[in-house]
Every structure is written in C-alpha cells, then in structure tokens.
Amino acid sequence: MKEKIIIDTDPGVDDALALIMLEKTDLFDIRAVTTVAGNSTIQNVTNNAAYILELAESKAPLFSDAAKPLKKKLFTAKSHGKKGLDGIKNIKHVPLTGDAPERIVEIIKKYPNQITIVAIGPLTNIATAFLLDPEIPKLIKKLIIMGGGIDIGNVTKSAEFNFFVDPEATRVVFESNVPKVLITLNVCYKTPVVVEDFEKLKDSKLYDPILSMIRPYKKGLEKYEGNEMRGIVLYDVLAAYYLVNPGAFCILKANMNITKEGQVKLTVDNADYNTEIVQDVVKEDFIKDFFDWLGC
Image 1 (tube, one colour):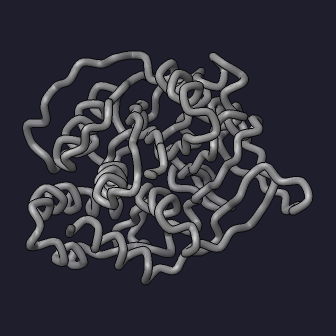
Image 2: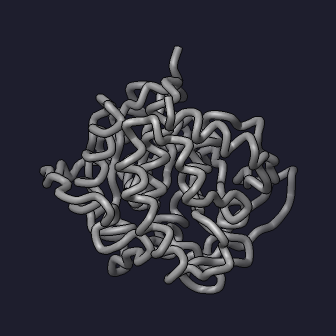
C-alpha cells in the first residue's frame, strides 16, 4: 500500500523538482498538494504548482492559501525569479481555493496517524491548521520539514528563507508535539549538482522543461546566495528524498527553539528531544536516485 502524503509547497525550482520526483517514484498516494506564499506570491506559486502537476502527470488535488505570513509582511525569494519558475513561459493562471489549512485538517482527520506531511515552504499553512484544530498535531504520522540552518543562513547570516518568511508559524509548529524531521541548510549544502548532471535526462520528455528551470535558477543562486556553492542546491528535493530513502541519512535527536527572526537554537538531549535533525546523507545515493526517477 502506498504511503499517504500531503506536500505543502511554494514552487520554486527545487520545489518543482521535489514534486516531480515524489510523483515519479510511484511510491506515494499524494492526498493533496497545498500552496503557500514564499518563493513568490500565492497566485504565482499556485500557478506553478498546477503546471508541475500537469508536467508530472499527477492527479493530486491542489489547494491554496496562506497569501501572507501569520504576522509579517511577505518576503519573497530572489533566486527563483519574480514568478518562481521564470524559465518557463506562458504558465496558466489557475483559481485560488483559499482553503489549504482546512483541507489539511480534513485529510488528517480522515486518515489519523496515516499522513506524512512534506513541508518545503514557509510553515504558514501547517501552523494555521494546528491553530484551527489543536488536536491535529498528534494525528499526523510525521512532518518532514526543509528549513533552518545551524549557525548559517541564506537570507541573513543565521536565518534560512522558509523560517525567516514566517518565524511565528515556525514556532507554532516546533512547539507542537508532532513528530518532526528537519532537513537544514547544513546538509543541503553537502549535495549540490551541476547543470551538466541534467544531461542524464536528455532522453526524457522532462529534459527541456527542467533545463529551462535550472539555468536561471543557477544564475539566481550565484547572484543572491554566493558563488561558494559551486553548483545547484536542491534544498526541497533533499527533504522529499528523506521520505523515499530515510536509511541514506544520519540523524541527530535534539531540542529546537526558533527565535523571532527565524534562527534555530539547538540543545542536544537525546532523552528529551522534539526534532530529528538530518546531519548527513549519502550524496552518491541521493544524486543517483534523483536522476533515475526523473528519467523514468
């Protein structure tokens, strides 16, 4: 039986690749894709999500909400371009449903302790769902999060984008009792790829659209996140890969707190922890599996 999942996302190039990979593995029953403003506005990221689902031949339902963070003004990413997938032209406009948190609550209640949520954008939708129904966290099987950095950041020197966009939502989620796995910047920076790697997809119908996304994304990363990366960082893909192959990861159990700026404060205490933090991954397995699935 396929594992039931919800993907909460703000596409974005790495989000797009994560969505495609999870669909192409054919391992998951995607009960919903929910969009949140982050890499771009809620309209842009919802348009992008609809485009990616069609590209991946997915039948997953799409719900939108979280046009802005819980308290802050929306801060969008520069590395993905103005609309999130600027390498793709003529993406269709789709209507917004405005009910993503309610749908999350509905699905979790329908399948208690069976749903894993892959959260690869700001945590606004997840936090709103928790605030709507405080019983929801204990009914979630697991929450896999891409966010945060231990003593590093990609917006400020110590704050990662997803947590920085909505630190209030991040605190709501991390103060809950939901089982959490966190993929931070630290491990993402260990697994960059280069444009030439995508030549492995040259016989796939995904080759042209993926290359159209990747090329401007690479330039955006170099311009806005520094040249030291030496490649394309697939942040959200790594979070999706944890769901597929958790055995490829090394985990640290720790207690985490989030500051008002979205910074991560860590206390290592295996007897009393609220998060499993990914420390390392077998890079060779990740890259091989990623391109194998995209090329299938």
